[in-house]
Image: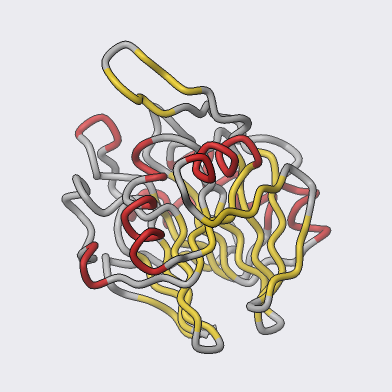
Length: 226
């Protein structure tokens, strides 16, 4: 299984001949190496309904008939738009042909700007656990620090975690390092930073703060074999 990072919160997982994209914010993302016209995902997983996470989901899913897996309200909204969706909720798991998906809580907000001065509320934000090929990947989505991260790590020993470090909208480096201490993953990768001026961070600061957790900084396009 190959897991690659593509700027902001985009993660691509290639497993068993399938391509899974998490939070495919490509258009307008100055840090990504991906091009919408070159991507043909089989599955798209969304952590929540903000534009910098939903991103190019509609275009990609229409083109490739990808299954979109996300929280129920967002899944229903995208199904109304003609996409193939599977709605879930926090604490629930479901086994797909590529592996098991389980959504966790996240402390954030969610909603899409549909036009000027108009928002569509899209349910709870979430993190996501992926159990694939005997490995567990945790993508925290956009979240603040919360103590139940310890419970998540105890219940589902994590091989690879993606944690936001940008601050302002999510955890900053200090809280993200404490989150890693609670989760105790074998490896952690910082995400959701430097895309916009308000979330500028030096990821090395996050790595230096880690306590007994292996931190890896991935540039867009770089990845790991699990």
